[in-house]
Amino acid sequence: MPVDQHIAALLAMAEQADMPPMYESTPDVGRAQYLAMTTGLRSPEQVVPVGSTEDITVPGAEGDLAARVYRPEGEGPFPTVVFFHGGGWVIGDLETHDNMARHVCRGAEAVVVSVDYRLAPEHPFPAAAEDAVASARWVAANLDGFGGDDRLAVAGDSAGGNLSAVVSQVLHAEGTTLTGQLLIYPAVDAEGEYASRVENAKGYFLEQPTMDWFYGHYAGAWEDAKDPRLAPLHGANLAAQPPTVIVTAEYDPLRDEGEAYGEALKAAGVQVDVTRYDGLIHGFFDMGTVSPAAQAAIDETCAKFRATLHG
Image 1 (cartoon, helix red, strand yellow):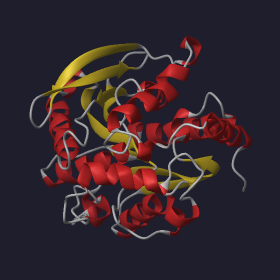
Image 2 (image 1 turned 90 degrees about the horizontal axis):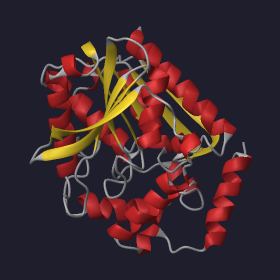
Image 3 (image 1 turned 90 degrees about the vertical axis):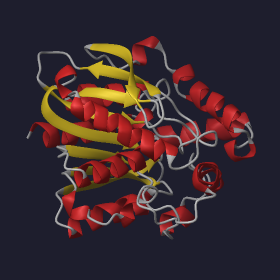
Image 4 (image 1 turned 135 degrees about the vertical axis):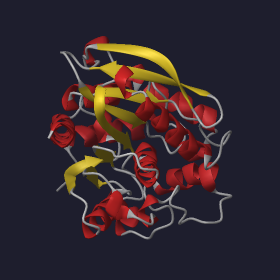
């Protein structure tokens, strides 16, 4: 189907703005642009309501990391979800993904711990993966202070979906059982060849040159593109993974690898729900304020994740 009309209008506005592409900028400029495109355009009434929020620190691989805890309304216990933001491991932070974390908190009725892991190129691979694992280990050891019971899950979009899949594999290998994982258009196969990367290489917000720019900053010097900490599709024991919700978008270069990961998990015997949202693009999980179709996809996704976490 054609691109959703509301998102098409957004893409047209972005093109008319005539801003230089991110891949021609520095990481600092890219971070500022992304913050302006997300938090900078969000009005107070568009902030998704939750019960409460609290800024804390959590242990990373090499020091404390900023994090934000989102608590749903009502009485617990609740599942606890460790959330990792997207942005190609180079841009993005707690503020750019504030509303996404709020959607997961409210829609899945879960305590969400959003982690601000170290970014490349200042901290190249495997820094982000190591931070994600270290922070999730700590949350797992302190569940009484979060959701209050033993239900632990991970969630993230794009690069955050990558980190969520990595964390799930590592924690399961260490003996920590997860209740579920939510992977929102995840990047899971660094150098795989997929039709969606060709079909959707230009014109749909996330473009192939930008993906190359992200990867170059994060892991361009890493020799093994199939390292499962970088490409979790190549993990050794996918059969150990928890029930998984994967969402992709029709006009997203990452579409096919996300769906390939779903197929690999199914083949390994994992309970998986994979949904492709036609007419939508990469980043739609933060486009509900401009696109009713995106909001419907967000709501449906969070409801599926809620069913996974609450049984």
